[in-house]
Length: 482
Image (cartoon, rainbow, N blue to C red; front, side, top):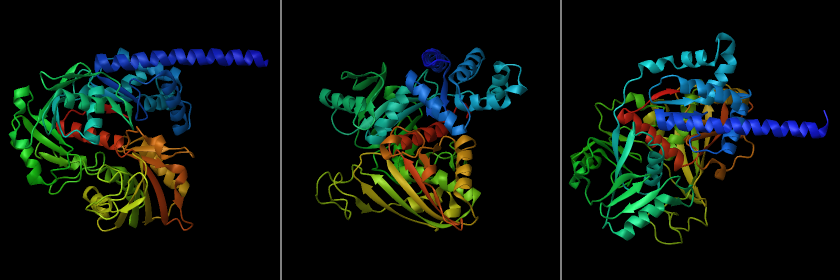
């Protein structure tokens, strides 16, 4: 074939692929907005993604499973999903496409395959939507708000109804709140509309009213005045950390459950995917989503503990600077944190090593930990230096982690990275709390000492863990297949 004919063939293929991707995007949108069925691609969100994003994600998926994941096959499977009756669901099209290639000889057609794989959807329980109130509106609060509002769909799960802040609510204050939600220096523009309604003290987000409530004490609020009933209060202020203080939320009218976005005392500290099923939301009213670092390392530690056994280890976090540090040198209650955050690497403490044992009791007393704050605004790295009970190799260890990232109870928590070029800015916007850097893994010659590098978006990935736990507490988890 001549070079010109080969080039023309390449152009034709690219045109067909982009056309198929356009249909892919259309079906994904229709499934979400018409049927409350969210489609992901190996845990990567694909709602509101463009053609190039979808093509690149298919390339990643193919590399991940080491088999071609074709957009043409994905579209065919999506058509079949669209043609059958399903309850609200979350489906991984990457996993379905991969399994179809492995099993296609066992099915007469794509629809038969889809019907078989999703047959358990018929027994899915009905969902009663849950009102949500954000108590505080800082970094985590705004990211949770963004995610809840962009994924509201038909409102079958979590409904953001109000945000509680301190101080007077004026036009200027509402405009500033709206601006901070609309534009973020790290995470970019909010993909939606935000307007201010001073008369009703509210933000109108994607056409939906979210009340802004000013309060000094949680127990003084009457949420029922706003039509809010039996709400989940997500406290992201950091002001209340123990059971007694957090119980004050339950004294307010219209509140039924509390979720703290920080480590808590005398309450369950939960890493969703690891230990959430140990706690019954019917009988427990106050929960903690632990810390971003605990959510990053615990899924990986669980895999290593279950597969190889852990004798002891040390955790070092290379953490983005946070709002509790000083922008310029000034007084601070803690050592070193008073020095300019954007100019210095700062050694500080972390309780993540001890906190892990709350989710994994078998690791009690086995991990030491420390932290270094570094001059990046977001995107952190945990380094796990572990002595394991059973001998392993880098190839075996990576195979184990890849299996857990592909199937099982931790697929939402672990993203398996194949890139040799991964740096901190690359992981911004990743919904998984743990990003396993497989090329960076080190295993000693005797196979008993391992060093693992776990990246995490300490804002975005953690916010998604908060939402996953919120859905569990509120009993609005949909039928899932991934």
